[in-house]
Structures are given as C-alpha cells and as structure tokens.
Image 1 (spheres, rainbow, N blue to C red):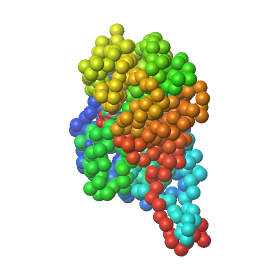
Image 2 (tube, helix red, strand yellow):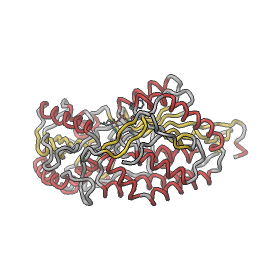
Image 3 (cartoon, rainbow, N blue to C red):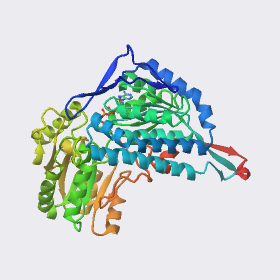
Image 4 (cartoon, rainbow, N blue to C red):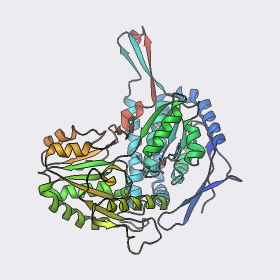
Length: 477
Ligand code: NAD
C-alpha cells in the first residue's frame, strides 16, 4: 500500500501524520488499496478560505489560459490512462478494460466538450437595452460519488475552472484515490494555489460542513436522492445555489416493431454494465404482451454474457459491486422483489460460483413486475432488470412515467419517427433511441426527483455562471 493521502489545500499536499484515516478496500477481494485522511469541519473551512482567496485572480485569468490548463489536465489524464484505470478498478471494481475505455475515456470526452463549449460561449451579448454578461459563480463545492468517479469529478471541476470559478472537491470516501491522482495532474499542469482544493472524508465529517458553508456560492452534487435532499436543506440556510444529479429508475420501451435481438442487447448493456451502478441505467423494460415470451427468453439467454469475474482480467464483462455495503443493499432489493411476488428469471441471491468473498452479485432478471412492487419504484444500483408487459402504447408511456424519478429512458423501434414521438412523451431529462447512450456534448440531468440542473457541454458550463445585465450598455456589446 502507498502512504495515506492527505488533503490538497492552497496548492500544498498536507501531512497525514496523526490524522484519522479512511481505508480504501478492493471490493473484488477485500485487500487494502490505500487510505485517505478523514477530514473535519476545520479542513472544510481552510479549503473554502483558500478557494475564496484564489477566486479574484482566477476569475480575471484570460479564458485562453483557463482553456489551456484544462487541455494540459486532459493531456495528463491521457498520459496516465493506464494508472488511473488501475486505480479505479482497484477502488470501485470496474473491469480494467471498461475502466480504461469508459471510465477514463468518458472523462476525456467530457473535458473536450466543455473546452469547446467555453470557446464558443458568448460572454457578453446585447439584450434589449442591456449588455448581458456571464460572470463566474464564485467558489464551487463539488461532492461526488463512486460509480463513475472520474467522469463526475471532471464534469464539475472542468466546468467550474473553465467558467472562472475556484473549487473545493470532496470525492467519495469509497473511491477517493483517483481524485488524488487527478489533483496531482492538475498541480503538475500548473493550476495556481487555491484554484482547486481536495478535501477527503465522509459526508458527515466534510461533505455537510462544505455544503453548509457561508463562503460557498454553488454546491454541485452527484449521488443519492436522500443526500441530495440533505444538501439542498443545509445549503438553503445561506441561499446557496445547488445543482443535483440524483438517481433514476429509467424505463426502456420496446415498441412492437422493434428488433428483439437489438433491444435485448441494448437494454442488458445499459442495465448490467458497470455492475448496474449507473444512474441513467435502463432498469425497467416495458415489452408488448404479444412479444413478452420471446423477449424474456432472449434476455435470459443473453444475460449469460454478463457473468461477473475478476476485474483485473482483460475482457471481464462486469466486476464486483463497489463495496460490501452496496452488495448488501442490492441483495436486500433482490430479496424484496422475491417477497413482493416478482418472478425470478435469471440470477438471484446466490453468489456467483468461484467468487465468494468479493462484493459480487449475479446479473438478475425479474418478470411480472408491477407498479406496486418496490423493484418497479426504487433504484437498486446493481445489475437487476425488471420486466413489465403492456397492451397499448398509452399504457407503456404511463408506466414509464409512473416514477418519482425522471432521469433517462429508452425507446426501441424500426421507425425512428415513431420512436421520437414516444421519446417526447417521457418526463425525463434524456432518452436514447435504439440504444444511443450518453452524449457528453448534450445536456444531461433529471426531471422530478432525479435532480436540479444540467451537466455536460454548454449546458453544464452554464451552471457555473452568474448573469449580469448592465442596463443602458447594449450599444457597447
Ligand atoms: P451518497 O449520496 O451517500 O454519497 C455521495 C457523496 O455524498 C459522497 O461523497 C458522500 O460522502 C457525500 N455525502 C454523504 N452524506 C452527505 C451529507 N450529509 N452532506 C454532504 N455530503 C454527503 O451515495 P453513495 O453512498 O455513494 O451511494 C448510495 C446510493 O446513491 C446508491 O446506492 C445509489 O442509489 C445512489 N447513487 C447515485 C448516483 C448517481 O449518479 N445518480 C451515483 C452514486 C450513487
């Protein structure tokens, strides 16, 4: 194990000596990967103060220099792709190939899209009699989870820096080591002291003191709905703006003219990749009653391609869940679905053979899932698919929209126009047609209890601006 990692505040790596630590375990076998300091409210204060001091200088730094820093950061990530992928795989269980291509790859795509948006952004425009100006929002607190940790961090840190904000990052205590590696990359890329600060610790120790801090202008959070609500409550005491990317229970609608093979492959990929730990995963599938038998038989057969294995081995489809806690949560959801009377078609509670000891769960498919069952309504955050039959298209749309969440959705049809008509009826922030996945250039975020605000590209960058109208100055645009 490497030395424990302490906070990065005001451009300095602090000492971990004598500090309480949080150990980071490999969920594949429980081995120790590393440790970070368990910070407290005083660490949060020092980091916010450093970000406050750095703000005027960074806000006044020309856009071209801010973009250049992000480009050097991206080059550093590219140079260290293998090391970052290894860290991610060890701390949260993603298979090494997936970590390299998807976890690190999507972070690079995020930064390219944000930098392009910053280049194109109109910082001053004439509106009516006014000059309307975008200004950086100020000090940003970014609180992130463990499922796509690098992606979630760069969307927040990259967007904030490009807009001219300074940042305090609190990464997930389950997977904090990639954040430490990223801070080193930013330091080496020449980020001025205090522009980016990283404070390690758990939600109660550091996350909440940061969200409640009066010196913070914007809190951007990705994670569970419950913690999102808590952050909104504590931030409200200072009327601090919040951006929240929360969970989902997203539905795929298979239309009666869709290819069974294509829709099965696409739904399983969305639901099972990253061991089902994807907020926008399609975890409910709505299938015409006339196609149900054929579709479920094909899905059960195809689930054999998604068996878990050692994440360190190239070609492994899915690794373990991110932690033993997450394994227990997912097993509880599977047990609840069985209790509620759903029909277990594949997978289930038994550990996959030969993998006992790790946080492994078998990809699981339930049939006969109805809206009264917990599996229809609650986010599992594991590889568990709920299949529900429908008779009419209106019923399918009503079932898809029968959710407190509204993050994503999918529609499969041989007729793209027909699929679009259905997509436009879904109350969700994104919808993929025939398997189209995350588009980092387009806005990403949720309706209803899936969140507030948007990330990715121009819409994601816009979250980090304040808007000022200088009245009487339109002619100076
Ligand atoms: P979480 O919401 O508990 O934690 C996310 C981040 O918030 C972590 O950095 C955590 O330390 C911090 N945090 C926790 N309590 C806090 C508080 N009171 N104030 C401020 N910060 C706080 O998520 P998790 O434990 O990582 O995962 C739990 C569940 O969240 C999952 O099972 C899943 O349902 C959901 N989840 C959703 C997403 C998503 O992208 N939408 C991502 C990860 C997890």
